[in-house]
Image 1 (cartoon, rainbow, N blue to C red):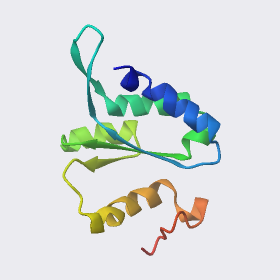
Image 2 (tube, rainbow, N blue to C red):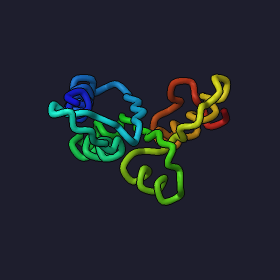
Image 3 (cartoon, helix red, strand yellow):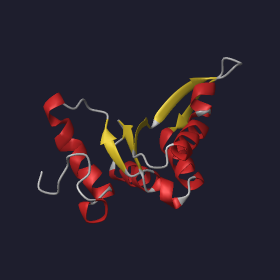
Length: 126
């Protein structure tokens, strides 16, 4: 429970302590927790990401790439995730040889070469 509740603070502190780094977050939408009184609840991962983004100065937020992973993949759900985070990944397994094919367009959309140069080996031609 404390780990999930401290997640936002941890990420904000990490970003502040690593201002020159790019940070990739992959956050599950439904974070199930049990509190100290054994009460079960679910915390929205995309809301955590939205809170983190609001707390960060624009310069640091621009260096973060946050995706929400969820089995809830209706167009309305994806629209919500996309307003809170930088994109969405389905919960369906991704084959190892397709990981770059899946992530590269999202990464390039977030960090276009025209603004960031060629970033970590992904080019707009890949």
